[in-house]
Length: 300
Image (tube, rainbow, N blue to C red; front, side, top):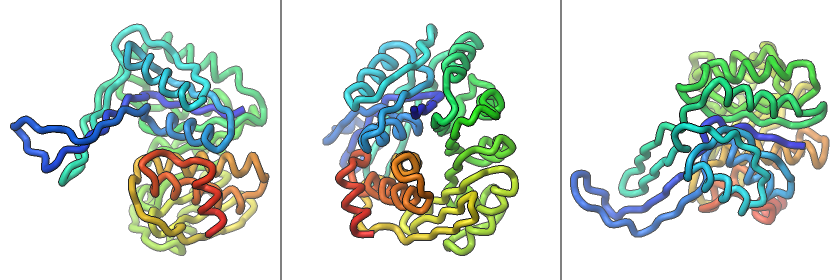
């Protein structure tokens, strides 16, 4: 079974405004409301690829209920912790001559809520996959990633981690199955600038020396690099297509890689699946679907 964790899911209210002017009334010419959060995106894409999974995390209030209802429309099973105080956040994404975002706070998560999440994670079994992705809201302990991975350590659960800087580096000692920094995040960890596929390889190997089993590095239009626990180094150019929306592309890559390894058991094929799934989301106003991914795989 596959599980995802999103600590602070959202409803993303996406609007387009012609020539946004601050301090004045602006008319929207496009709007959409979607469930948001990195783990949420992973769950939706996994289901689009044909893989059942369960979304875990914290939700609250009427917005939390709408997040769950929206996820169920995609066919994703939800097992969220219902937080008593506050509401799940609404993130406003304004697309105009410039893009702006206003992100909400999220609910008041208590120790009892955290314990309830732990109880659900304790039910995972050997061979299961768990994707932990995104930032940790300020109301939660900053070491939530470490707490979860320490709790699950040694139980044979394949954990994928998509996080930045300290959130990522502090969990390497628990040997995550795969981590997915982009080249900029990888460079930030080591204080260097990485722009080519050849440059990222030695730094990916450094993360393996610190404990990561497999390292997947996304590089937007430059393609991606994969360094496996077997010593394989696989590089690829990005599939060709027009960038429509980069939001969720990295999450889609994680989903595609997990789906690929489950389907084929082959790291190189899983890497290509991840690359094409990320690109399919980038080339679409919505998250990647199976036919879109297969079309890019055939052309890669």
